[in-house]
Length: 147
Image 1 (tube, helix red, strand yellow):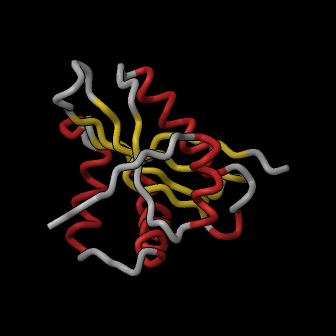
Image 2 (cartoon, one colour):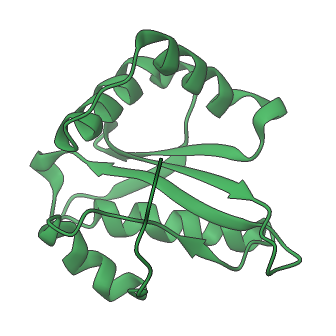
Image 3 (cartoon, rainbow, N blue to C red):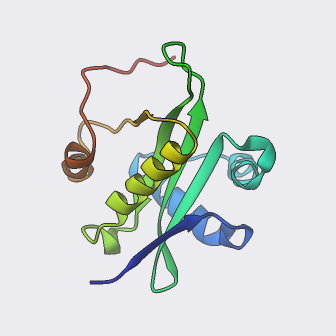
């Protein structure tokens, strides 16, 4: 079994991070403008945006997955909560524990930062990912609306 290492994103990760995030966005049949890639990467590295975070999963020194997570205030809690916004593992490593390792790393970071609540969303047709999510999280009855 290949060992997976989870670590914070670094400036040298921009190319690999961009490729992974682009593949994630393509899975959801969407894209973002170049300015969003540039701005998001800068924010993920900036101490001025400590609420925005990213981790990279590596196997054999190669980035194979990513997770973005955001801390924010919540009116029902005194402490912040953590929104796990993007989670992606390259198709070649799915089933090797990369997704689980990334989620657990977010849980660990949130606990260390005083955020006991971590939540995320996925589309109902994402059956493969939902098999993991059903084991590592709790499905809620909420339905998302957006403008």
